Picture 1 (cartoon, chains in turn purple, green):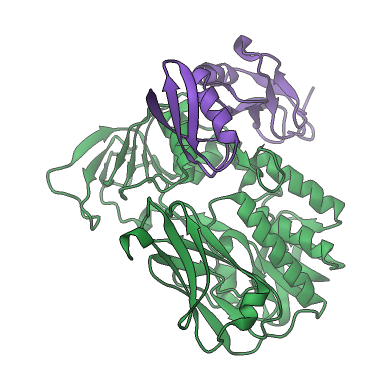
Picture 2 (cartoon, rainbow over the protein chains, first blue to last red):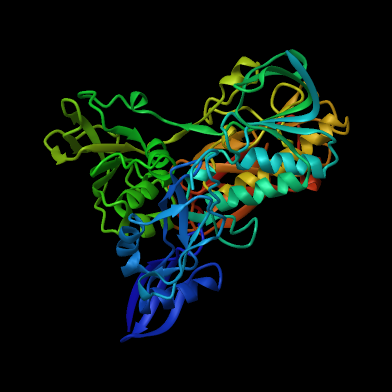
Length: 126
Length: 428
């Protein structure tokens, strides 16, 4: 049996978890104040995922950027390539809250959506 | 000069201001007016594009802009009046506030109650006295956050972060996602000062080297930062001679603490707590000036926005009660609430009399981490009024303990309340 110490990132409490592994198999999760810890530990060991939050450029908006996020946690290994790709995206204002920016990011099945609205600047040309 | 009147006037539209406004309306205040100096509502939330907000308040995870939007919508539904681009200049006598805005000119608002919700500021470089040159490239983490997330400028390519506060860790990740390299994060304490989830998902996930008990002893560079000199520190935070090394970088981000913003409060004669930097408040979040209330980071710096919203709702309710004449006028004598063993500060700092049946939630921060079972206890003279076991107690995580109204009615008002956080297993 192998033990792996994890810190749960599901909520801001950040519980200490101990995942007990038999080879690749998760036998038990110790610690944690709620049940979400176990789901986190399982995912962290098999397919670690994180939320991605970044910005993309907006043409003709009140501000130059709009905040975007992954619609759900995405594979950890894709965070940097995804951020890299999103740095080259330019949206046209207006952008609405939760507008889909990329429907399936890098074949992950995860969408990128706007996490705020960005109205068009008055007098901005089409 | 245009004159207005309202029941509750709220200064600031961040999470505290908006929640206080909504709850004041819910508690029956007819006219609730929020003054915001920025062009948009939400305070600092629009630049906090990461998630982690609202898990408790709304039952699901939000980014900062989304969390702000939820409250902006709630405020609109509750018919809260808002004025953006309007900065309060002074809180005068008899709760008359003067404010100004580019389109509005000078206005005067007569309020029956005022809510201070100005939030906090970052501790700047000057407060740290880091020796060395004064080149460009030294930013507070929140300023860098605004540049990257709102203005669209990435302030550097090779970054050192001083301090391991949440904003510092979040910006270390943010700069990495923007293509910069974070060469190191330095923390003077032996432990990380922000939340542990941020240590995992902002620092460890990206392989950013973290050096605890380390600080910056010199900034070098002519026009732009070229390198910093780092050094290990001893237990009294003094740099250890001979431990210095240089880290080449073009940017130094500072995440070294937040300070409640209280220029307006001070000038209005509101008594401040030296420990928190914020107003002294009672169980209703009323300050030393009758009719002036305070909530959120202007009182003391919280870890979580959910806590701010919740406390601001209580404060907003109390302010509405005062505006309607329901809240009793407080007596001159208070029951002080003091920071005891291993406690840095407690909010509220006092109980006003009469003890009118409002329960109190005492929030505190410990001085030293306890990584085993800890005990938070409230003493009153020789009696222990309340106590609760904790799995651990860390300076980065605020603690609280509920004091039900029934308990407050039985306390000895001639003795203060003292909050201790101890480690029973070590017998102290």
